[in-house]
Image (spheres, rainbow, N blue to C red):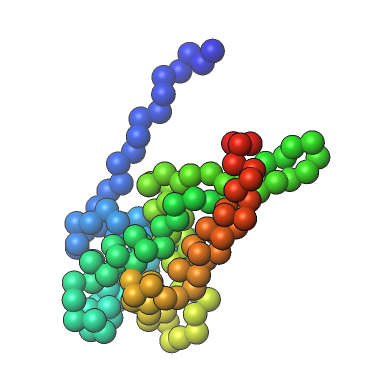
Length: 155
């Protein structure tokens, strides 16, 4: 039995301009090689482009895009008698949000375009409208979980 106590849940900090935790989560996922100032520039330029494109509050577009991309169920590889089986599991809200941000950033990196801010803004607007590669990834994950529904008892 463990003698240590349980780890305390960390609350995400909010970003300096919008005072929003979700924006800070996206900034921390954009981060490459520790260049946080570059990540800040990318996200703030993307937010400005979203405002120019849609004319609405860009934080609402970001929130709606993440809500649309968040998966409800996912598959997890489990080994049973030498076979690796894809077992569907329910995804919690925090884990779902992390997956959604990861998928949005991966889809925006794959997009063709001038710079990352432009690609990210395009992907966020597309996801908020129910289109884009991140939405396709979520639907693909749901389809795979639905196909392996019979293995749900192996959780």
